[in-house]
Amino acid sequence: MRSNFVRFIVWASYLLLSFIAKIALGKLSVVRIDDPEDPSYDVVLEGLLAPFLLMQLGYTDRITAYSVEDNQLGMRQILNNGATVVFVVRILIRCWDGSSPVSRLYILLFVAGFIKAALWVWALKSVYDENSIVNAEYYPKVTKEARESSSQLELFPEDQKFDSAKDILKAYFRFDCLKPHLVNWLYHPVFISQDWMRIDFYPANRTFTVNEIELNFMFDTLYTKAPILYTKCGIIGCSISFFCLVSALCRFAVIFKGAFLINMYIAYTYALPMAVTCLELYQITTLAFLDWAVVEMGKNLGMLLFSRLFSRLIPFLANRCMRKKRWARSMG
Image 1 (cartoon, rainbow, N blue to C red):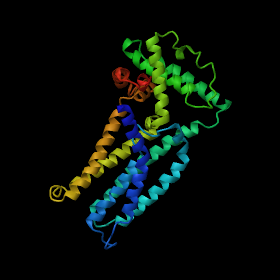
Image 2: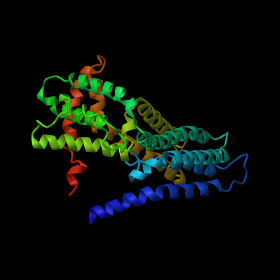
Image 3: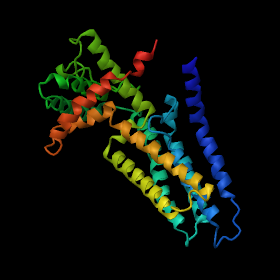
Image 4: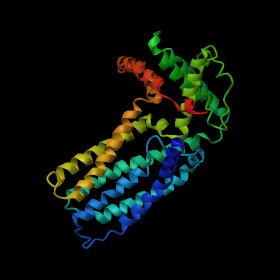
């Protein structure tokens, strides 16, 4: 009963978020401005809500799609979000006051909101692109990736504390080569017969764990932003977005440092960027404790600059990932 209620809340939030955000943007577009050349500070503060609504249209990092069919809407969402961005820019221009320092915050918050929405569309589009026609010309590329994956597993020291990390990387490389989530992926049977990919000699519990992690990678690829957040562009985008949020939050506090207890409207407005920043900080923190983090560190274990640091972090993070309850064990 409880799981059904939680599922309903998540489903309703996912479906209604875009609808509610667009209604709110529509309300902001008709805010009354007595003097367009010199908007009041109330109007300027209301303009801050527009980029926050754009940011919410990017959804959270752990919910990109609620169903597999949503991943096929990437192209449509590009047009949809593009129109929303134009709408937000119009609201910001309308509420802009050149003499108010608050207006400068529009730029920072707009950049953060634009990146958030762009990452969501990118996540949807990436799955759709991979699900296109795959033919034999992909085999040389995949074969090269398979050889590189084998050499990366050999970088781990022969120490029992790295067993969990090896299982996570093996599960990822099996998933990456076999791509079980793609209907048209014509993988070559030779991949699964490679010694470094085989798990048939594992104990039953360890075999189940590797398959469970492999399914978890498939789930993240279909329904979350994890695959793109661990790319270079994803990391840079998240860093810029979070930096803009923190900068806007600090700047807002400096501008109204003596007015929080006097004007409750300012206090409520400040609570919004604070809540959004805390949520973003929480999401960034959780990224460090996912299987994808172990995979990326394992791939770069051979880099002299990070090898010592990663050698210390990987066992800790891998063991933590192994202890958490995965969704596969909650089925049935």
